[in-house]
Image (cartoon, rainbow, N blue to C red; front, side):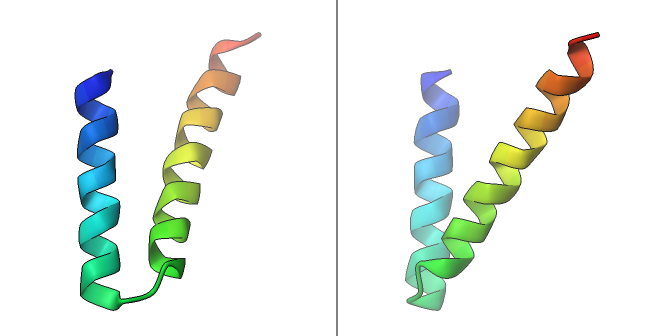
Length: 45
C-alpha cells in the first residue's frame, strides 16, 4: 500500500514537471480515484 502511494506521488510529480501545470495531475488523480471507486462499487451487491 505504501509503495503504491509513493509511486503515485512520483508519477504525479513527473506529470507536473513535464507540463508545469497542476491540472493534468489532477485529472490523473481523478481517473485513479474513479477507477478504484468503480471497482469497490462493483464488489458491493
